[in-house]
Length: 313
Image (cartoon, rainbow, N blue to C red; front, side, top):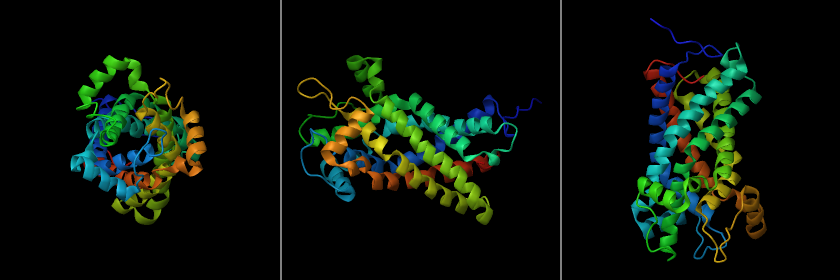
């Protein structure tokens, strides 16, 4: 019987091992995304408030969620859920699995639990950035579908631009070409790199510290996930604001676009709305990332254990 080769740090590798983990990350990420999606759409709508073309009442988190349900119904809280779930299959699959292998590369022949903090940070940013680069088209469709309900309610659109994931792919390709799928890719990739710098590095480091006291069990996974969600939100919110606005923007009456890139977006946001506007959506972002991390990591860890490959280390 052929045995799988060992990756740096001692873990088995090979196409079947990677496919196994990919299926587990896909299952866990779909569960996490479906559970937390209403918080995500509320966060995105909060971040779109304050733009130059914004009219109407500004809401807080609870008011925004209630307004979505009032104007669009309960289904409005799940506008864009299909591309969101589709995005996480390649995105989370690559970043979670890639992190282990990239971190292992930095470890050489040493055990993975001896990886230095800088190696974990580099692995998290690299895995997250590459994973997002693969998933940008689905992310763009998700943001546009999330924003369309607001535009319909404000009378700027008669109806949502897209009826679903495949309809969006067809219309964007016809109107904007393949390049249209990558509008706002730079801030999206930057955000993903920062999210995973906070998420993967913190989860890995927190688990290493907590497991000494609790053992490698559900309590350890819960505590590590809570730490992970907070740091990921803190690192990524400014880039998330830029990503949401750039991906959702439409041409102004003179034909120009409101934002030319991440730095231009940040400059205009600070000038027009103050520096704290860069953290619009932080609380709902954390409220979403926290439960997302809880559902994902606890599900992923338990699936790994149940299928015999052991917990994340």
